[in-house]
Image (cartoon, rainbow, N blue to C red; front, side, top):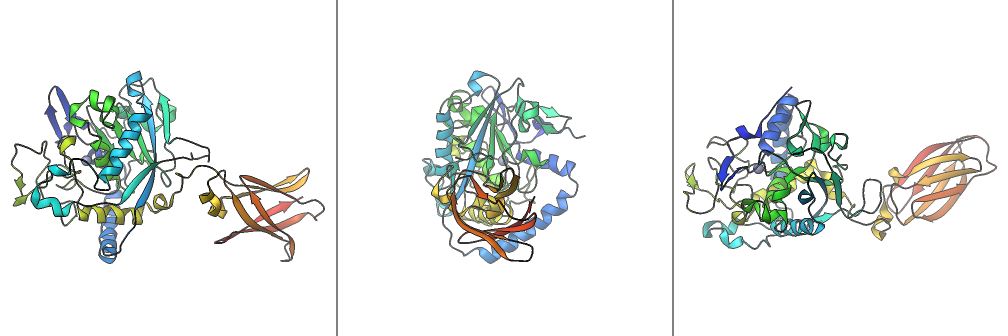
Length: 418
Ligand SMILES: [Zn+2]
């Protein structure tokens, strides 16, 4: 059993009356390393693979990447049940931050302005849920549990990640970036899982305190320090494999973030003004999204951080890059669905073969049925939405092969006729 208390972190500092822990991602990673001893070596290999990928792909021009997100609002009091509008505001802040459109770029000091990067990542609210049904990309769960973000099950797993314990089960992280919004507790603003490094699979995603989401509602009323929606920008940086500029852990000049154009620094900054901004022999950026100042100071990713995030997405979250769950059910973009996901079932009374797509769509397929001797016994061009039935009366009992073909793929499976 592992008990990790956020309040022992060196990232703790005082702001007004609040004791705030800017980020719990490192602590979450430490938990993962305790629970999964094999992870340390695996992460070392992943880092080597990532650096190799970066060396081989650095110059490749890219278009904007779209990442589907779902917000799981898990609320105990009415004020924690933040509005849709507050989430839309947060999404806008995210998209500005990852496209160099944030309004506080002027806080970046002159010598670092050439490093400001348009990351070319945008985020969209999911329009299809895991069952293929329409969604606005926001789930809402009322819970009896206070400070659910810090509530543990058997001292390890967090209740917020489990519907069974008053939280909300994640949606398939291959296709959705899961963002839980709740009261975390311990004045932790947010945490995230690094790629392939969650302490347990159900935690894959980002958790943000309801007081640190967006720049309206509870995002601005409850905690002035985090009133600009930058906590989520920072945590998604971790989700895309960025470290703090001082590297993993509490920081020293001996550790680094594996990004070339971020100056090495000894530890976090808590403000972008009135402080020495030099450590480890060089000036520090301070306004980097992955540092710790108040939201109004957090303003930029560097080119190197962009490359690392995109390389990591390509290597470790490839399905997320290809996910189309921001297309609503029935959208024409669904025409090229994954044929392997279409289920084939036999019905004996009346005799027919049923095809079932995982979600509503507009499919055009060629259907071919072969007997075990390889003879084509049935063919049809079919257009259907989610389900399609083939009348199959009068055929001898036995095993048949049914093949589905669209413009790109062909998938075959067996069906037993009786
Ligand atoms: Zn962090």
